[in-house]
Length: 274
Ligand SMILES: [Zn+2]
Image 1: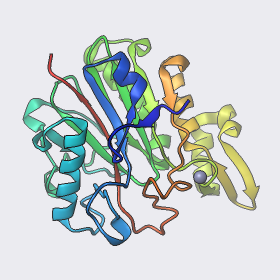
Image 2: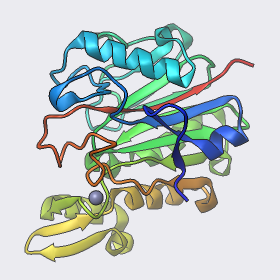
Image 3: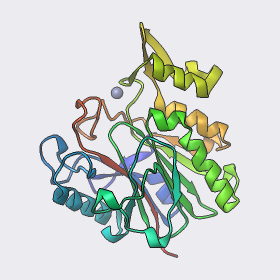
């Protein structure tokens, strides 16, 4: 069963089982539909850093926040750098980066908070979005895991940070791995395959398929799933999307498929007050 489901808004896929189980939670992933951007960015481009008109991106972000049930004023995002820095977002930081890339939380790929009414947002065009929720603690998080972030273990670092900061146990955490480029479409070279082998060791054959000479097909979602499991997240607490962003350019932007010039989807997670 696909955990990310379309509802009444064509611009959003929600983690519907999570939202049904925990009414205080809002979590999902935007599609490329239902926005106002044009050309390569058609239509719901949420990335300010990709060459689109800023005014169009603001409008797209507003439409998305509204559909998700939050005011645009609490849309909070970071300058993603394919690293593994994580920030615990405070109330004072709510709203950072929503209209200007320069105001975004610097050099950060993972966001966590236990505060309600902060709409954590991060941006994707093939990379893997990781969602986190610890319901007993009301801690939410989202992390951007391309191959670099993945081999830098950003998923495990999110889990460790939650343990350190809130004193929770890995078994308290639920994780969801969102739509991203699938092993059907994600060809990598020897260097990337080697970096994956360095973190997965004997499990690397589960995610790498050697196709020709120095080329491999990589399952980045499964790589992240294995690493989360190694960090102590229960396998039954991890949801994985089956949607490939490169196969489904009708629904998603794909950096690979569209030759690097394209828009960005948003992975979002937020808590309601109360
Ligand atoms: Zn594919």
